[in-house]
Length: 232
Image (cartoon, rainbow, N blue to C red; front, side, top):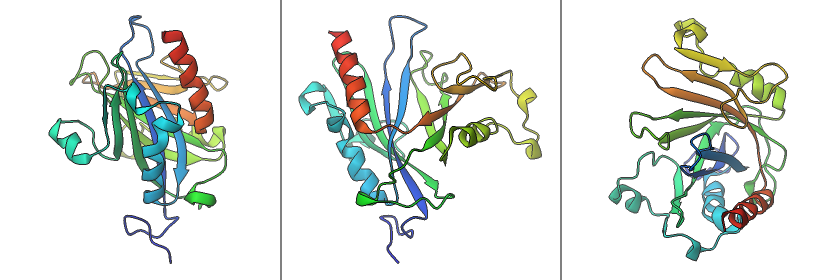
């Protein structure tokens, strides 16, 4: 039996490459963070290798960044928060922060990998983001986790509607100070593209639950190129 980079049998877990860009816009209503899942793998080593290629395959060159770090020791030395799974941390001249990380979920659907240990099929991801206003009142400090992987939007959406709830533990929609969910025929709840659930905890914590379709890096490269053109 082939073993993964962390000792688990290959295929037992899925390893997702998560590409996040964060920027404080001049428009207070603008988007602070964009999250994309750009590949899913059945071995940790393959996912890490893909994570280290991500910014370059998205069309960037090393010289574009003021800072570019891939070393865990450097993350620690610079007191980088939320280091779990972090593979690349870079900052552009306009202060946009780029994070590429690897998130792990169990392979409940028994998805099979093809060449390069990559899962070559359309996937939908349920992603939860916690906005950490206690760290930064701009909303830039965020913690993002992949909660589940699905082969249809409908299944992912069904799961997303329950991510923040645990009725068996007494956690219901009424447990939150605010709880907004997109309607049955809507794909966002008014709190950002693909955000289907937005909730505010009793202590002011903000939670965003999104359903994201996986993206190939070619489409990401084209999207990032158009953003760079508009920024010049």
